Amino acid sequence: MIIIKAVMRTFCLFLLVAAFSSPAAAQALFEDGHYIDTNGIKHAGLISINSITDTQPYLLFKTGYRADPDTIAFSDVSEIRVSDFKLIRKDTETLVIEETTNDSSFIEQSLLLRVEVAGDATLYSTQSDDRYTFYFSLTGQKPVQLIYALYIRSDGRLVRDNTFRNQLANSLHCDDHPDFSSLRYNKAQLIKAFSDYNECINSEFKRYTGIPTLSSRYLNIGLGLGSSKYFVESTNNIFGTEIARFTGTAPYLEAEVEYLIPSLKNRIGFFFSAGYLNISDKDERVIFGTPLQIDLEYQVIQSTLGVRGYWPINNAFKLFGELGLGKDFETQKGISIDYSVNDRGYQDFENTRLTGHVTGGIGIAFFNRYIIQGKFKHLNSQISSESSDQRVKQSIFMIGFKYLLKSYYK
Image (tube, rainbow, N blue to C red; front, side, top):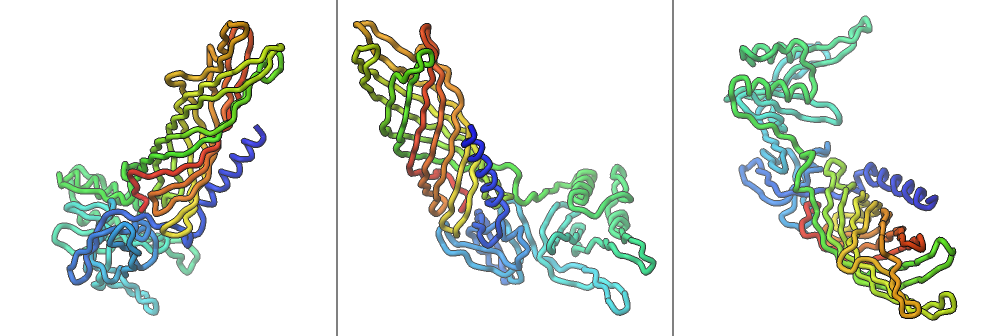
């Protein structure tokens, strides 16, 4: 138990490092999309959604799954569509403040804007570091900057310029729409205000969510085949004696579904796996002066629910570690240890109560499609019969190859 707790603590530390390590070690997440350059030419391929959310002045684009990514400057782009992102270049009315005179005026400026809500009333945004600037437009009009400022006056008082409230009140009119007097200049409230207004005037509108919170596109489905090294020990707790010990190797087949978390650049994933294990073995012992052949049958489906952390090396390779808990389910012949004394047969696995197992593993993935991994499973199976209470200690080491049927971590 102490070893298991130490492993879990180490693994949690690995997850934190994997999730929040420097972007230089990150592996870009590419999805099908397109961009249109400033000459009006459409380029379809794979676009890194991380380069859309990062603050770098370019996007990463690949023409094919294994192609090298190209760097495309945002200044050369007029439109981007990928995942649930839409960015479009517009001539905008942008507020400029003259620092020497403190005078302000609107100038026309071409900007690549992220569309937040599209409808008769459209909300756009730009981002610099953690600061957002919002623009809005009505049908047929140029986007205009929503004015908001926070500054300190000469007397030391903190003042907010909430001119954007008046801008919206003068432009968005609907009898059932609430006023904007308490509206805050933040993304969530502005998105709700524009969605409510479009609903109020019965306008069709679309909310662009960016990276979806939950989506089947971030599911990986895999099949694996490997070899399992097993160690099974049966002990009679009443007499405190070892009845049998079995060691060997057996083939192992596993299917898996994994959900990768895109907001963490797919460095953390939750998985469910089901593996088939079929062990047939024998051990020869002398029990109470009688030589016996003890036969083992161990046919189970091993289910595991766990978490996996990835450490990208580059765009082609990544390391990972996993930790999970699961349960074994008997199938076909199930679990049995059989032997006979004086022509009388015994089976010590009459009522098997399988407790949960702990799984740990490490591996490496190639091109987000091919996986080589090693796993360790530990299980205590409690067996009850009329004459004894036994436990089987099982440790299984596996190394195998896995192929992802569906991979959106490109």
